Length: 523
Image (tube, rainbow, N blue to C red; front, side):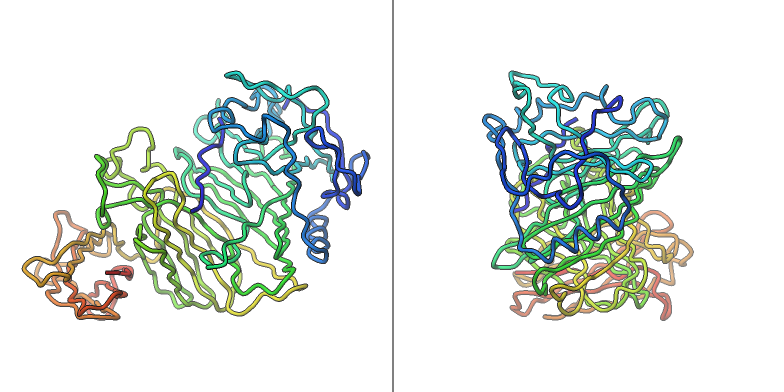
């Protein structure tokens, strides 16, 4: 099960010590224990450009993987969740504070789930220098003591702040912490789903590999800037990679992502632009749920715009067994995990505010060729676990000792837009089919959108439905209260099949007026 990262707690210029890029992963004094091999030594600031990071990733991939040392001293190696939350970065020491650069930078301590060290460099005027750990950068509370002087415990990640909601207050905008995970919000939102740098062997019986960001280079924004650039190098037993993120927060927060992947071994199960989320239950899936809330999830569906121009909507589920779905495509226009319903009444949770969780949309830049959008659904009995993963899997194998580059735009936003003028499947419901043999199911899909508002009551749209197994019958299309909403219902005679792939949309004449709803039913 994928652990959720709900542990993200919430500098005047800091003294900096530089480290040469070539010695980045060489051991050094960390956590009070000296690592003897290849100590790089202290040097002055080093020239930097994005090519440095790509060259470093390429060089890493030519060498055997070296697992990071986990050498946090006691008690920091065994901090509880509450203890870890008691260590907070001092906001008065935020980097760029008071410099009118549009952003401030804060760092995360190591401990709890976040044992691995990441190196963080600041880039200014073409030079890079690393941030030195000091206990006085943090506030230690509730009995958690700061380390002894001279102990370099290092950092586990960082977060960016900016005036996204109010001009006079710097809210948290994005965070990079834990393996290759990162999250962001748009204006008025709270954290929900995560993105990752790279997924390897997701849902594989042999176990998933979790690549990790090992170092970041953060460019100092210009005064009054509305964007910030972050570079990162990723490493894992199977691959190394370089990333460049250009982050622009606002009504919609946008990451422009450029990546170069260097496999150490042949990769036939690589996931590009991966997204990770949580789905516990909703109206179409409440088996065994005893909860006052109507729905609990960070995302309610996978949206896809295919290279052929078709818009697909796949509601996600909390299955009884792990499910893997693959949607073949060539040069996709986009895909993402959506929190489509943004009404408080759909969730009724004042604390979690699920209606304010972001959707994340991947917009490929350039042609990505053939492959599949893959959706992984993992059973969960709690809302604290991420159990939904979506990513692009290229057709064929990523060959060892080669370079693979991809560019995409990652949009964090409220709700979603299909961009095709089509009505959306806003609600899916399912249950036992009335007055039918046991085992038959009824599916009810509510489509809402402007493309439906001018349809006359006596000119109902036509249902275009299909199933991969069993038979569909009693197919009905009815107008819902309101001028732009229609309901499609259909009953499935399963015929004893263990699984059926369903598709449905509404047509006026031969023209689609809704996106295509796709759904996997399992016995």
